[in-house]
Length: 374
Length: 250
Image 1 (cartoon, chains in turn orange, blue):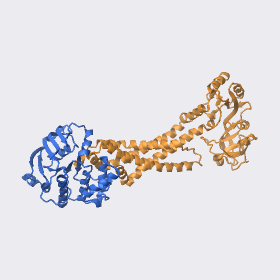
Image 2 (image 1 turned 180 degrees about the vertical axis):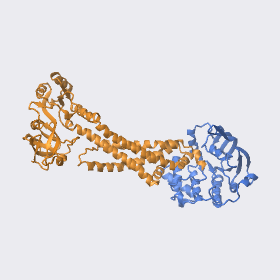
Image 3 (image 1 turned 60 degrees about the vertical axis):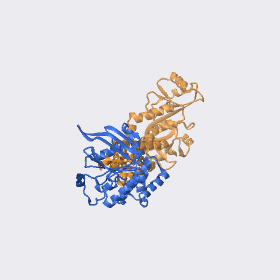
Image 4 (image 1 turned 90 degrees about the horizontal axis):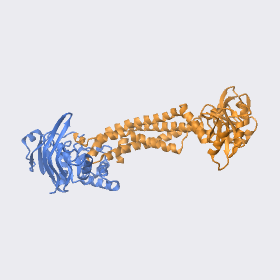
């Protein structure tokens, strides 16, 4: 059975190439689009996911992280007095301008945090240290955006929104999903860069004492402070991801690319497997005439589809791996992990099996008496 | 001799659009193990339809068909492949070999259908090819075989799984006379020496000498039967050329 399926498939090399091209196309689109999608949504909430805080407190109706509105730092002291709260930190995320040495400007996302706790700070420092951010005017940028911001080495001085900024270190892999790279600094410096008043903050990060009930603390905070939203990092992360995925349509657009890849692959594979089946219809009729049940001839076609899926998947994964590698320095966050590899394999096999259904229906309906018609 | 196939009052009608076309009108026939039976008749006489019904490829509209003691006329369509697998081997006019498989692989495929796989299947396939004198062509694809060799591979394939009944539809039509005689010799030996029931549909009067019984059909009915292979109706003899030129092999 396997030999027949393999030989049928490899008999017409050109048709096989077309089939595999369809599968490879689908695999690459699935991996790249899903990878972009996962990278995209993870990037939108990366600061929240790496914050180490137990709760985030913010003004009401904030739909996503970058839209934090200034609120009075008095709220921080109110939160500190709630039983179960171990620690609070002020935190700011704001869009502002970075002036390059060549006179150009870039929009950046200034992230102001407490360097003592490092909550909400950078998580992959490769040069310098977080303690270096305690000094005045100190900032840290990601090495991915060095070229964009005109930075070449530690110690260089730039201007952010009219204030001096000295590069004291680099991170690696902290991407921004927009064109505005994250620039980390102390909360004190961020007030200047973001033009906030001393008694303001965008967020309060809350750390709880070990063993306390998070919901109870949340209720107690809500009872003391009006007009705030109190979310766990997971909740705020989801909220931010959902906003960018569904409200802006960006995520849907990326997912549609993956769906399109599957559809194209399905059509190509269905067409070529059907053509191969029609070419070998007499043989399938002979098989049935000689006693092969429908399930036997169906399995031959499914094996053909399976072989196409397997070869196309392997080639597609190699091509996808090269694309992911190529895109890394370009800043496109295409994530590739084990569950995506498995998901793509499942989708590829399902796609090819589904594409074979039309051919399976054809051979199932084939009259074995047709072999006597010459 | 043990009865292999019993057909009693079998009728078959085909539907063509709104029209009903009766093809068999109450046919009775018995075929025994160890004999060669030939079905002869003009085109449209119902020979191939009868062969298809005996081979459980088509179902009769009415009547009884018993294959090796099992009544099959009431079986559903999904049960007929089992009967074919267990009891019947087929040989076709245009060989119907799988072009992408070598000779041995064609036989192995049939063994695979019958549930015999791996090394036992490979050994059995080569033994079968050896029995038809083609062991040296085991790894040759059909495109590189002569017509006679292809038909011998087809015979080996039909014997896969050791069926008791061999049904052949015009097995010598695509062959020259000498090659055709060789094939018929083989089929006769299958019946006489190995106890198979062999039923052959043919137009070719040259092969009549190999029959133990000849059954003549016309317009869906049996019009004559003979145990003397040379007793062919004058019309049949006139309709079939005595020594046709060799047919170009496909």
